[in-house]
Amino acid sequence: MRKADFQARIKKIEIVNKVLADGWAQSIRVNLGDIELTNENLLELRQFRPNEPVSVIIEPVELNLLDIASRGEDENYLTFTEEEGSEPSPSKVVREFKL
Image (tube, rainbow, N blue to C red; front, side):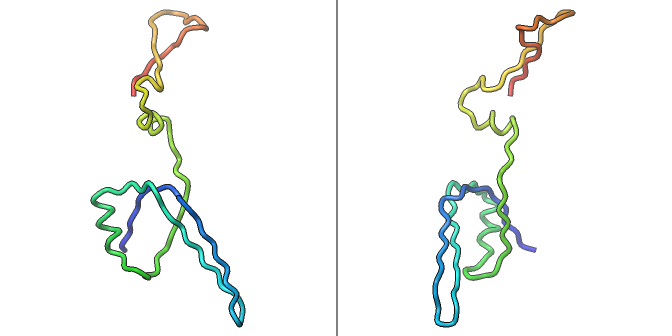
């Protein structure tokens, strides 16, 4: 089955209600911005045609500390240090890891 996975930000959500002679209709349009595409998922996305029915799942991105640190511009965003000794002082950092 064809599938195109990518991450993006929701830029705008439009909900339009139309009153018809025999009832009403609703259309929803979601515009995406800041789409993170690679060559691979761009090729997957291009396999779909306009007006082709697709299944859509929108879920929030769950960031972990490594993702947050890699997106930050500050190199020392997350720092832990380790000191040799028997009993660490309560005011000192015990471990340091560089990401």
